[in-house]
Image (cartoon, rainbow, N blue to C red; front, side, top):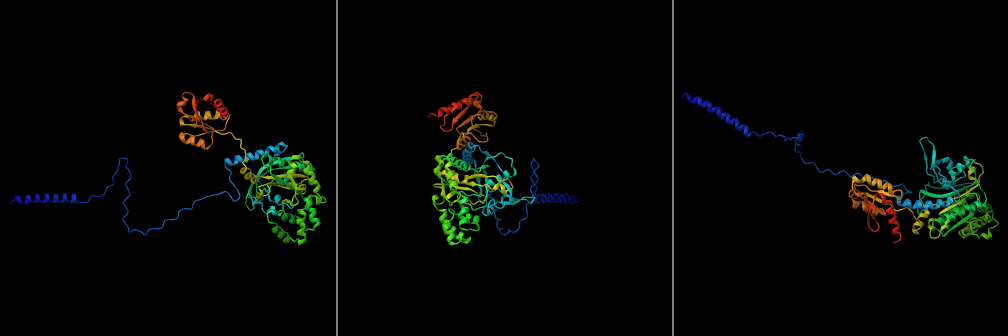
Amino acid sequence: MKKNPKKSKKSSKAEKKKTHVHKIVKQKPKPIHKTTKSHAKPKPAAKPKTAKKAMQPKAPAAPKVEFFAPKGTRDFLPGEMEKRNAVFESIRQVFQKYGYGEVQTPAFESLELLTHKGSLGDEAIKDIYRFTDKSERHLGLRFDPTTPIARIIANSPDLTKPLRWYYITNMWRYEDTGAGRYREFWQAGIELIGPSSQAADAEALQILMESLLALGIDNFVIKINSRLVLDEMARKLKIPEPEKIFRIIDKLGKKEEKEVREELKAAGLSPKQISEVFRLIRSDVSKMRNFPGVREMENIIKLTDEKYRKMVKIDFSIVRGLDYYTGMVFETFIQGGESLRSIASGGRYDSLIERYGGKPTPAVGFGIGIDRIIPILEERGLIKTHRKKAIMVIPVSEEVSGEAIKITASLRTSWPVIMCFADKNLSKNLEYASKKNASFAVIVGPTDLKESMVTVRDMNSGEERKLLTKDITDEIKKWERTKLFY
């Protein structure tokens, strides 16, 4: 009986031990985070579940940002610039043939210069793009090149005259846009400074005619008038503010006659004066020879080359809107392009340089509206570009790029050459060469180069030839000559 308590004690301990083990087994293990050999950081503990929130509306997408060229201006990409430069060069050759040298003036001038009394006139002044710089100077973008050129002459009285200058440049006017009318536009023109003779006026007209003919335009007429005729008309009709009336008459062709008559009435002219204005500006030349300026205009026409005289006509309705003209004025119109109005205009301005502080200096000039004639030239297929077709050099991998660069440099002595890059595959680069209208594609590959050769493809026919790299220029030239006969 004595052993039983001991046994009971041991049994009790064993039971306790079993119970303890049992508890450990049944105890829920604590969650542990798996780790990797890279000792990744443990994932954050899961957030306690919460009640579902109501669906929130999505924030509106940010608006797409787009920027465009300002109203009345344009971007010219390479194809367009090639056409424009062909037009510029054609006109430039005529100007230079007559001994004119090119000038360039600043894009902006002092506003005081541009708005100087008696220079541009109210209509032109209101269209000036104007701004104030950081030093509080009032400036304006040039409205036309004649005013800045007058400034140069006024400040440089010792320049040897006559001066024959030309320009091909852009300028700006804040006016309504339309067909051939932009707020940034280009003009090509000449200024003949110093001579007061009618022969100088005839030279200006002849240069204009030859410039248009060089572009392929031959169905034009230059309508000329004289401010002397207009001044005499104002004197006879006792018009108190002639410049104001001239600017209204200048709107004929741009506005209906009825509208012009209404403006003349609003300007203070009587019905009789208005009727006389229209009678005089539509008179035959033979009935106006007693007016000053008419015989001079007839003589100016006679001084031009005989084959050009039929292209010039006296028209008493022509009034240039700028106040600085003093003698002959003219505008040019193309048959079939009347909607574009005048494509070139000019005249004599003998007092402008003096108004800017210079000595009295006679001058005559004109400007051709490039943006008005280019649509006509394009429509008639008259713009001829003479740029050689490019050759395309195509390395098939980066390892041959160095050799491709050397080949490109050697070919550029004879042609414009574009080198492609190996980040595109051969088929993509050949497609690009086709789109760029390349004449040949020179394919540079490692296998060919082991034999000092390249593969050349005629992009027109698809024919391919293997050529030695040292002979490539001469061989392509021979190939080109052969193509001319087939």
